[in-house]
Structure formats: C-alpha cells, structure tokens
Length: 233
Image 1 (cartoon, rainbow, N blue to C red):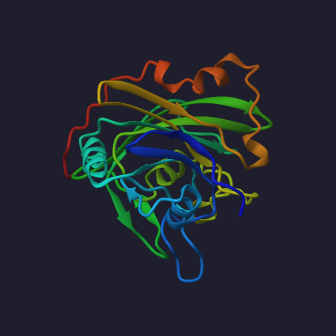
Image 2 (image 1 turned 120 degrees about the vertical axis):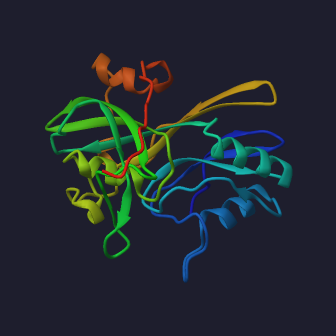
C-alpha cells in the first residue's frame, strides 16, 4: 500500500487523509489504518479520538499522547470540533438545503433507519449544488456522531450516496462520502484543515460553478442555528 497522506502534524496530533475501503482498526484478515500509520510515522502508539466508516475517506484526527487524546476526545464530546463532509448523489433530494433531525434505529444487516421521534436524535445540516449529469454535491455538517448518520440522512432525503450499496445508492467504484474539513481551537491556535478526496471518478469536481465552489469553503457558509426540540412523537 502507498503512503497514507499526512495533512497536518504537530507534537500532539496528526491528521491524515484516510483512504476509502480501509477500516480504522484491524479486521479479521486486514490491517486497519491505525497500525499502518503508526508504522509509517515510526510511532509506538496513536490514540483514536473519533472514527470514520470503512467506506468513508478523509480527515482522521489521531492523538500522539494520552493528554492530547483526553483533550481532543473532550472537544468532540462537547462539539467544539466542527466537521464537514462531502457526498455525491445522483438522485434528486426532497430539499436542496436544510437540516435532518430524528432518532435512528437498527433494522437489519447492520443498517440503520431514521425515525420521526427525537428522543436522542441524530442531527445534521446540509447545503447542495448541482454538478451536471443529474449529480448533486452535498456538504454536510453533522452535529452528532451516530453510526452511519450521514448515509442514513441522505437516504431519508431520497438521495442515497452514489456507491453506498447498503442504503440504495447507484453502484459505483466507491462510496462517495468524504470527511472534508475540520475546524477547532487548540492551545490558543485556530486550526482549519481541509482536503479533497484522492480517489473516485465522480470526485473530480469542477469549481467553475460558483455554487459548487462555495460548498468547498464550508466554514464560510451561512449555517443557521440548529434547534433540536426533543419529543417522543
């Protein structure tokens, strides 16, 4: 396997561009990304502070020491780290921007579905723009970190992600979901990181369209305040 791209590194943590198709930790017969990057960087140990699905590529933040791991994990728990994802669908969404809020429940074969209740809801916001040829680019800002949340969210909008076989996406060379951006404060420093996908024929995105280009600067978008009113209906 070729070297894993390192996007940012300091004394406390490293941010990599995880390839799609690789799990975060070891599987039964396949090595996970964690031991691979430890070997590549010649480090004895790295700490996971968040996760990405196996099918998802993009920014993965790894701590280099136990103190950094505790601090960064707390940032995630307190939602002090802003995360932004890119996804592509070839199905028309019920709405072109807005929010999706609802409880998630397990159905079958490890898959999840969205419910109308909001007891412990998954919540996220999105903007989108047409790419041509019936495809649409989504930038998603999740406010919670539930399993398969973004994939279920787009499925609920009638726009399953291209290549997401589990949720009805059109078959393709990969699942078109990428962890694109991270923004947070640490030690008095404002850290803002983004990286484009390195694989996938549909991720060759032209920025000639200003609406598409705007999505690639997600921190500059006018994200509305997200109000989550919990209920059991």
